[in-house]
Image (tube, one colour):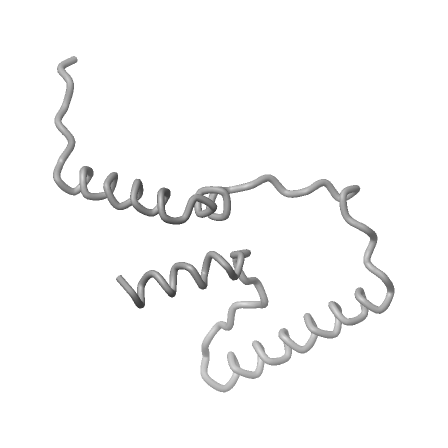
Length: 98
């Protein structure tokens, strides 16, 4: 099979990715999919932590149901993607100056 020439869009993408990796070397580690830690690697939650988590979940469910009843909308639960703040701050700072 004959080698193919990358499209201009592919070349632009490669250029931007290379630039990001050079400016923010930790970005590859922070944004790459990782493996979940084994349950033995973290301490067991205390009774207070479990109670606080359960209370938060119950409150979120009540709020979601109230919004759904009032507006017919579904509300996502409490699940934020993990992102280190220094990476987020670096990206925001780069966008502001770039």
